[in-house]
Image 1 (cartoon, helix red, strand yellow):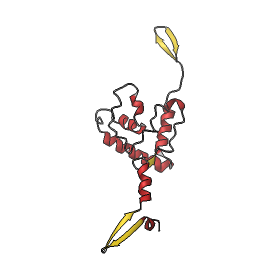
Image 2 (cartoon, helix red, strand yellow):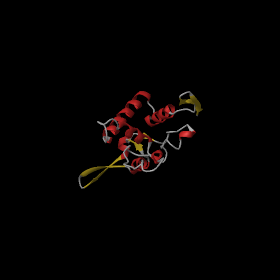
Image 3 (tube, rainbow, N blue to C red):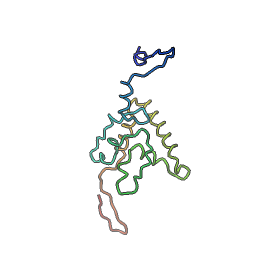
Image 4 (cartoon, helix red, strand yellow):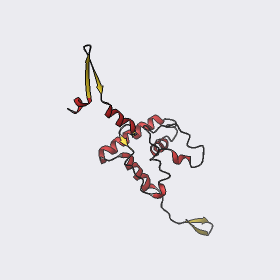
Length: 152
């Protein structure tokens, strides 16, 4: 019944042409979903120090392939969408250089697996992983030849 409610069949001149209702089209046209599946609405960056550097809100894309020049200025890479930065970091070690479509496909398949195992938004899982992987403030011993000083 839901499908029949959305489809109107006009029988003019003996031809039956299905037409989708406009309510579904306008709803899906306004929201941006990664790979057409996962929305950015419920993704939250809980760490205040990383909110400026994990680009989720305001940087929504359908695919993590914007062809933006994020390395031209200092700190411009903070404006790059976080999933695209993951794809760019996969293109390493000679044999993978320049193969961004392969990296996008790998990220899409990995996000599918994450969604199947956890039943949550994989973008949120990835943002939480980036937050947990960040260094914490600590001091270390720096020096050589007997001269040692503490550096934060």
